[in-house]
Amino acid sequence: MGQSLKKGQYITTMKRLSFDTGLSARELRTCISKLKKTGEIDTNATKNYTRITICNYASYQLEESFIDKPKTNDRQTTDKPKTNINKNIINKENKNNIFFSESCDDNMWMETLRMHYGVDKNTVCKALEKFTAHLNMIEDFKYSLKQYRTHFVNWLKYNKDEIEGPGKSLYKWKWKGQATKSGNKIDLMKDKQIFDKPGFDFKIIKNGN
Image 1 (cartoon, rainbow, N blue to C red):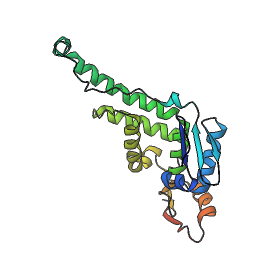
Image 2: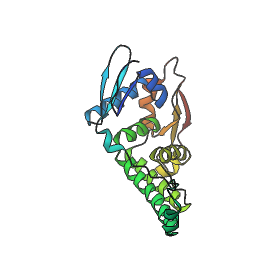
Image 3: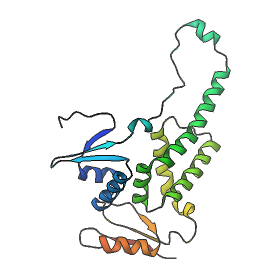
Image 4: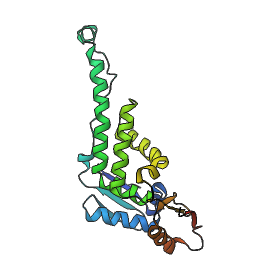
């Protein structure tokens, strides 16, 4: 849009951001408001776009290391002991644990998950812990935070009910543009009051028991 951006800044529109996150306009405004109050982000809105600035952007960045490094000469290759392979494996395994901690401490990402899936932060952290243990057990070591989180979101879709435990997700519902949500009757009735209107196609998928 012809604007100069600094690191950690992003230009978008509320409509596009709603589409990308799967959140309704109301949910998105609530999410942004909370993140601004906690000092996670700052925003500057115009009639054409919204510029979002991630505060303390540098603290969210992880240094990437790559296993396959270019060989500079034959002597260097000869001098490197075989144990380097084992060290790389250890580094990869430790990264899963680092990604777990980074994700639990990322309020912005947590708030997005909470709003999208209707779960609290403790449930997400519990799910992350179980997911990380599963990855380490099968030796599925992730190379980046993005790769780790993408796999987790897909995993959470199929394991959320198990993580929450019996009685936590007796109701399931959705509306146009929103992924299926689950929770208790109070959660259902809150959304029903707001979105059970013409054009939203509000549907109750599981009504208790």
